[in-house]
Image (cartoon, rainbow, N blue to C red; front, side, top):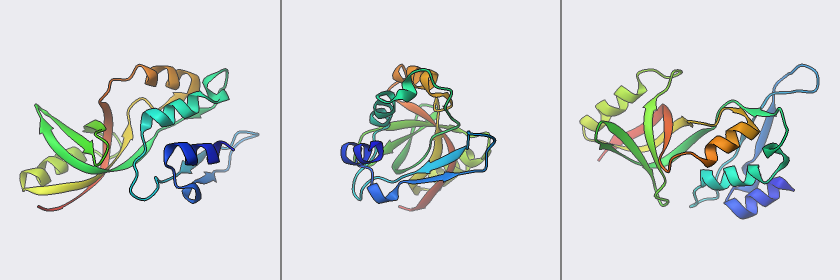
Length: 159
């Protein structure tokens, strides 16, 4: 039911949702949930947070999230010393930061922009989506409007 509700309400392609569980100990099995927006749509991270907060995950649970990794289509521009991704069609923005797991990608992105290449997509992990759900949801409710995205990869081409 929750899967259908998310798909109807938040533009998730219903048949794209995949839960892949790893081998775990006892009753706890870590896993990865993957999903995509419907064609021509974008996902609003605030609505995803609100949807999760409306479940029992916002209460006394030990269930946690390791990270939220997204791939966003849009444009990257320099703002002061920061690089900012503006997601196409939504106005959502992310300040790009160096990722511990993909060191050097931020500099590669700066170099690509310096060569006049146009960045078309960015993959990264959204800051704040780590920990047990009740705490994560409370902290995300107070998150700044422009969130931080730890850059893992990007695609760029000639303008």
